[in-house]
Image (cartoon, rainbow, N blue to C red):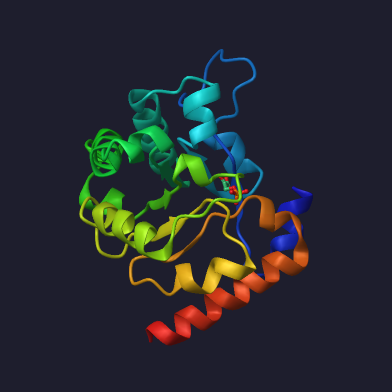
Length: 203
Ligand SMILES: O=C(CO)COP(=O)(O)O
């Protein structure tokens, strides 16, 4: 509530790192979309790789969460991405397509316009390794084929001031999902500036 009050009148929106697949009921410890909305959230991450790996969330659970978020009026930020092994074996495109198809298959074209996708190669999250702009662009172009044209597609995975402009200048990279660098105000502001520069170049 305090956070919501602080953000009122600014361009900053509040988001959660996860949400329950259940709208209500006896699910002790779960945080529902309705509860997040009560706290002023506009967005919720769904299917972050750490949820997929550490909490064993499968594609079906992530599909239910995505639908639940949209039905509740939250914008889901659906995270997809391949592991190092999947990239090495040449299955990146297949993994992305499977993750997207499963999460999006029951959504209407209108629902698809109330969604954000984040491409996060698992091997780049928190590791300091970043996808090259070309690699990221290639993955974003694959993702673009599964969504509607205006769906924002963010890149996440060690985005930092040194690589933000190059990544954000790519035609299908619409923004960033920033972890580590968001904890350092100067770095985060530098990334925001890179975003502004990239946006002005796209116009
Ligand atoms: O997964 C991420 C944010 O949720 C990305 O984290 P890093 O920017 O630290 O790699």
